[in-house]
Length: 311
Ligand SMILES: NC(=O)c1ccc[n+]([C@@H]2O[C@H](COP(=O)([O-])OP(=O)(O)OC[C@H]3O[C@@H](n4cnc5c(N)ncnc54)[C@H](O)[C@@H]3O)[C@@H](O)[C@H]2O)c1
Ligand SMILES: *[C@@H]1O[C@H](CO)[C@@H](O)[C@H](O)[C@H]1NC(C)=O
Ligand SMILES: *[C@@H]1O[C@H](CO)[C@@H](O)[C@H](O)[C@H]1NC(C)=O
Image (cartoon, rainbow, N blue to C red; front, side, top):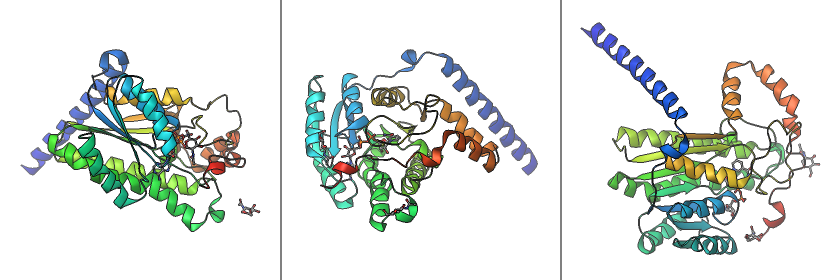
């Protein structure tokens, strides 16, 4: 009897796996335009919306009919983003909020709920990097990157996920990085924080699924280097093979992933192969590839946003 149950469960599992592999192959062949669902009228909150891909996502979400709530530590940055959003005819609310400060996140979150309403799409986008070799990183720098890139996601999820669970409606977007799946020299605290953000994302989505909430979707975004200024000075050898991404392109990908309820975005697609190879090949073989691109030297001339981070 137990053996029969086991065999039935096993066959069911195998058939399900095959079904979903087939389903995704079919969906892969359907052009994105036909798979997009309307997200008109949703309220999107974006952290780190004062510059870079945060700002561009705000404009692109507004362009497809969403109202937006903008968070950043930089007040000039979000004010400018709000102006750009309002030009599209959609509403924008902006709040100065340091997402590394737990109490501040909860305080501003209740303000948002009173003034703008229920957030239905949460984009955890704010992020920083120290740009130092591990032995030269100060304790404070390690703490700061973990606070902004990883722990902040826990605080914003705590603030907004319960309402989504109650309504069984919502979408959580985690802007991590390919450095949340592969690592590189010269960015140890950043990799640590991005792996943490990926872990939180992947666990929480399983909990909402286990709770039967099929109306809440999750999108993990793991891009390669983007030309926003955050990684100014960073450079690999033979970069024409893996060119730096344009912010407009990445922001567009995020909005499209929400519209198509895509679970994982790796961009460029070559990253899918790299993640696979990292698991398949011996470490020394991987090192040979890294040596080809001279990734160990990539951060040597890093400038990033250091020049403005002293305020
Ligand atoms: N630029 C890249 O190459 C790249 C690659 C992969 C992933 N990412 C990730 O994409 C996200 C956005 O990066 P970007 O390139 O647009 O960077 P960016 O520096 O242009 O924008 C980040 C924004 O976050 C804000 N911010 C920083 N600390 C904050 C805090 N404590 N509270 C609230 N806001 C804060 C900044 O003021 C800034 O406006 C980050 O999470 C980054 O790690 C970037
Ligand atoms: C804040 O944003 C403005 C406008 O985008 C930018 O010029 C300025 O450098 C930013 N300041 C900091 C401290 O990041
Ligand atoms: C650490 O910082 C010192 C002082 O700035 C510098 O001389 C040294 O090269 C740095 N070490 C590494 C590994 O970056």
